[in-house]
Length: 259
Length: 365
Ligand SMILES: Nc1ncnc2c1ncn2[C@@H]1O[C@H](COP(=O)(O)OP(=O)(O)O)[C@@H](O)[C@H]1O
Ligand SMILES: [Mg+2]
Image (spheres, each protein chain N blue to C red):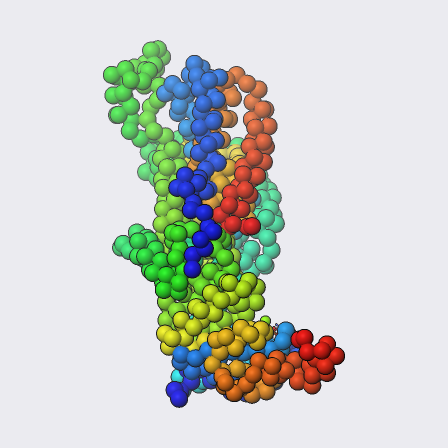
């Protein structure tokens, strides 16, 4: 088994009196998809924001490739190879796919103050990277707003991969998508995993997690109930853990097993 | 995985979905209209040409600044007051204090660009809408301008700038004309009319290309290049399109916005210097309502009031429409107050059209 790229040890996060995370341990290895499951409010977003440098943990340590680290900003995390695709603020709809893809890291040509964006290169790379993810763009100048939700996720993922992410964090990438778009995004996740990148896939949909996950960690009210490996746990058991075991069992019996 | 239900987009439609579309149509319509109603009024003779080109160029100079700022997601309502302020400062420094014109101009630019930076920093630091912050500056600067002018000269008009700036190298960049020899030659060979009587007999009716027009063209080219071709231009779009998303990928949004406020102030100061050199005087009430005219040019040019989308070429075409109509109504002998009616109408039409184009682009289904 390969060593983890990133390891989170006993992470706690307090917002004033609210204990959003009460000691969560989690790690990601290269080429695996580690699913982070949990109901709304379980602390999933808070946890990955800690991992991506948005929040500083109140307690606990983070280790990246064997070195203990402290991230002061998302930039630090990005520099360490940790890329995050947030569901809502990934793309700017009025701008072209190319402009979005390269935003903040535009390739330039020319000299001194007369540098311009190398659009030939930018367009070519964008088309190629998108095609690699299975999306054939009509043209790289088309506005991101014309893409479907799944395609937008894919642009963001392709961008992170192209710029050398070692860990890719996806916050509920499938929660707002239809069946077909979800399948596309799951296929993209599989593709990225095969390239040796470690993926943190956040979802509250057990079926989506079972479709691509290698390991599963369930968060419940800021605590983790341990990590399960693919094949050692059933969808029902995961569902059970997410809802806090007991409660769901009671609920399930009263609903006649429809949950 | 491409969606086979996606209709292939015709190149015609693709060519149409661009910010300048409305302005291009507008220019064609406006020219057709005035060729019909004022074709024989001298509007399209060399002197008439120069007349509306100069007015359009004035609009264009401030529109370029307003355009980049609006695309970056902010407004500057203090442009008009800044024009009055810059003119009075430059005039006080040269005429009252006896500074050489070049030094006065440089100091004026520094002060005004500094004020632009303060505008920007206030917006960034307070998180207030730029609409409110710059509205405050609209009043503050106008008040200061009148007060300073009366304090130093007991009046609101300061004359004698042209005499004071005579022969100054930097002042020449804002007043006067270029290509004098070429236009004299055009007059000599009869391509343009020459004066037949008076002190200027034998000289062409159009002396040359006014520096105002040179500045306008220069700023349009620079603005277009910056916005459409450079990395910084991409950051302007990104800052106005979604500041949070831009910050997340490392775009220095605050720096971009403050710089655009400074650029807007620079454009206002260029406008003020050209006007002061042309009239030979500064007045405390100059630039009234210019901020709104600049914004209207930009909106006619296809930019979205919400930021993140627009074009400098569009804004320049908006300025051209503005100049042609304002002067055209005069040539056509129409009531000039109709100009305001036209403005209001075209503003509404432009915004409706932009909203529609936005829907086409973002595919808001
Ligand atoms: N910035 C914050 N300030 C205060 N409380 C917060 C903040 N962010 C999250 N929380 C709280 O932490 C808990 C976990 O939230 P979150 O991580 O968003 O859950 P999830 O993403 O699993 O739905 C919630 O109770 C939420 O109210
Ligand atoms: Mg969440």
